[in-house]
Length: 296
Ligand code: GDP
Image (tube, rainbow, N blue to C red; front, side):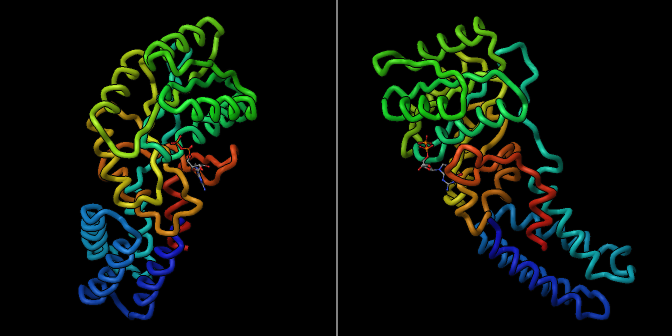
């Protein structure tokens, strides 16, 4: 992720290095390049504007102009501003509740929900030694239920089976009861997605939220959909009290705009990055590391 952005940003900032001192003019020129680089990486226009203005104000500050190595100072400003845009700290999954801590996954079909459910279960079981159960309430696609059952088996966690003839809420309620009875630490609920946002889908996921009372409601989104990822996130955020985002398929996304815009637009942290199709392809999101990677 971010290969193109990284090259262009580094190029834009390198031109400043040749300058004996920073002026409004040469900072302006470099920032024009930075702006193009961000837009080409599919960062939302509003986010790009805010980023550029913040960087400009800070770069033109007295202390920066007076430093011995002003171009280095500007690189640091860009770095810090990128980190702030993506969320200052690494936002961990919050499981601090009376068990079972329910994690509800919502998103469009094909976004990577089921895969992410399996990955998250593995991560919690292996790294945090949690007792995890998975349930699928996708009664419209029995194949999706089977897929999650196979994943549960593969990563060695419990699977609560529902039937396509039941309602999603019935399956979800039973899974919460079972998880409580069987002393599970975490119950991950994989919901049905549709190809496009519609009212029926939103009503269903809202009802599931009411039934399961999740401590985490994560929006799963395909990073490769760029600006669309941000639009969909907005719609879900209006319908549901989201607590965070899982940004998937970052391994195939050379631009990375969604990672930069999502936090700024919906105000919710990205908690994980999906980095491949296998069950070990999920990483906690570290804004600091990503910004450093972008700036090389
Ligand atoms: P769902 O409909 O939202 O449950 O989506 P799936 O979990 O079935 O994923 C849709 C497709 O995306 C599958 O082919 C997955 O293997 C693939 N996929 C999911 N997450 C990732 C990821 O992080 N990287 C890559 N490369 N593929 C992914």
